[in-house]
Amino acid sequence: MSGEQAGATRFPAEPDERASVVRSDYPTTAIADYVFACMATNGETRTALEQCSCSFDVVASIIPHERYVEASTWLSMQQVTGEKGALFKESAESKAAIGDLRRAQAEAEIRCFE
Image 1 (cartoon, one colour):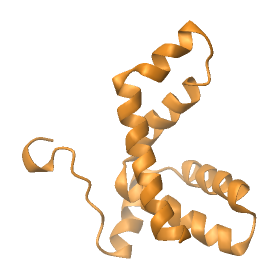
Image 2 (image 1 turned 120 degrees about the horizontal axis):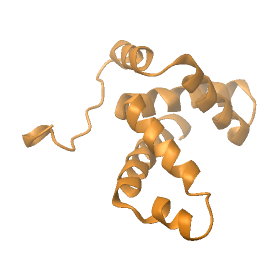
Image 3 (image 1 turned 90 degrees about the vertical axis):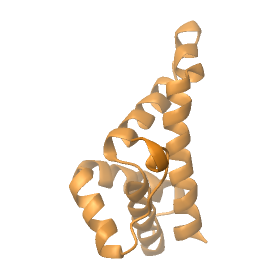
């Protein structure tokens, strides 16, 4: 992207639009993994299910699946200790991808958990 659209985040305006983004971009296993992990953190209640599902929808509406996988991979690789782990913690690429994911998660927190 270039010009005005470079770096801009577009939020789908309508719920149906958001749902179509989620269905077309993210595989079912990614959706389930996200919701299960979220529920493990926030309690395994009906309310947590609704909040975690909402959270996933918001994250998926902000970042495409490819970027989500990239950020998740960087986060996993940051667990490597020692000199080899430094690459995964200090690169501009990892910081950018993780930053995108963290911003999407923060937006989801505001929309779904407050």
